[in-house]
Length: 437
Image (cartoon, rainbow, N blue to C red; front, side):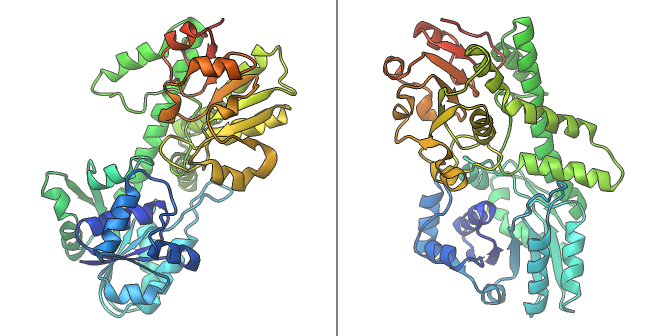
């Protein structure tokens, strides 16, 4: 089948590459001429494990194409996926201007039946708005479908090729049949398509992400309480996760959640609720707790240094909001850097993948190290903000030689407590006892 993807951001690029891998001819459209030229030349603009290999394979197989010409792609395709940004406005609501502008353009350009698929995360009722926008420009028949993505950054290729389910919101049988054909490679191996109405599909994405944000935040609250009463959050987590009604995933405590989805979607659902005079009290509490959790270790650093970190040099390992991505949107590292700088500390950071994105944002406000051990040269303490695999089994002897103080503040609980203890480090993590030297 011929498919057009409008938008080559994270979701659009992964979705387009996946659909090409499933045997379709995919035409990806973006208004950024420089970006499109790079994509044509095999340059993947985001970091995502295993994406580049699949991307290049499908370009070489002539199933994946890139253009800035929407009409050219539209004329070749029966199905049009909208993978456009829906950034939060100042009030937290999702900005639909990109989605509705492209819908307007499609209405002006289409000459035959199309299925318009909302892949972007959008508020309930967006399918109706897209339908109204296109209808105002054409009498040609079309259908609008909601097909939310459930990709985890860092595991997007795995999730896209092996989804737990495919959610499709569609009213017409014709659209359902077309979507069934697209996803037949998945249903052939037992992956279900869950059909529903468009509004339920749109809400499913927000509800899923918001629930996971609540789960993470609840575990962070439990972790903070563990420290008060002397319990170990790792043991509590194992006990809870063994209950199959709860499960082990998203029970890892740390310095809050970030990224492009959870913060934005929680805000958007809270705002959508207010528009209907409904108060999502749990989500409001989740958002407030997460804001505090992100910088919870800064007060611990101050406490260790007697109440002031003025002039202290702090190394930071990790800048991305999570491992295996270069995404720094809503990253806890940024909140901590801002607060550390405000309190007079100096920050030297290392993240081989996300460094460039932070440098574009912060410039020379902080220093950037070439390697993880280079960042430790004569520092007063180490702050771990991202759980990159390379940080999980370091050379503690080398660390001790380079650091002024053998002090680690671990925002991701990446070491068993006995490891820093055996190596003589002061070690403060989340929800576990503090190892003092």
